[in-house]
Image (cartoon, rainbow, N blue to C red):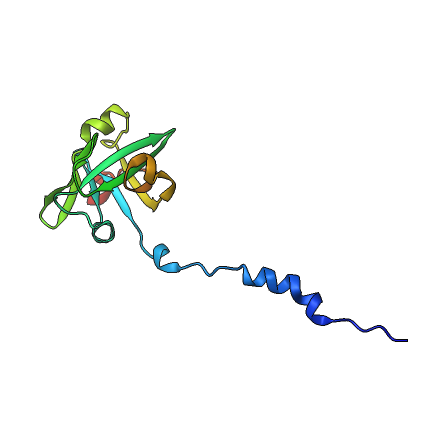
Length: 148
């Protein structure tokens, strides 16, 4: 007597695994959210970041730190330990000079950039939409090299 197998039962675990796959929405990863510390100590933002974070006058930013990682949260009104967003022309910045000086960040001789990434785990602690600030430190371009 010949044995027969029920193929539907053999594929059942595979179908279960396939049905658990979730497609990653790429819209959130196409944006390059960035900020940089200007030579004045102000934190400035790219146009793309301004639009995406909906930065405008009347908004406030609170900063946090864990080890060497900085975090920032955006608020629609003033909250404790927050900085106001200031408009200058079509750009927005935050007066962070004293904070970065206190953190011993050498923005005068180095170029300091932050790649911002949404960090929902920090929303409760920070009290608003939180972004992880991944710091990149680059040598400043020398004026002599730019002139030659």
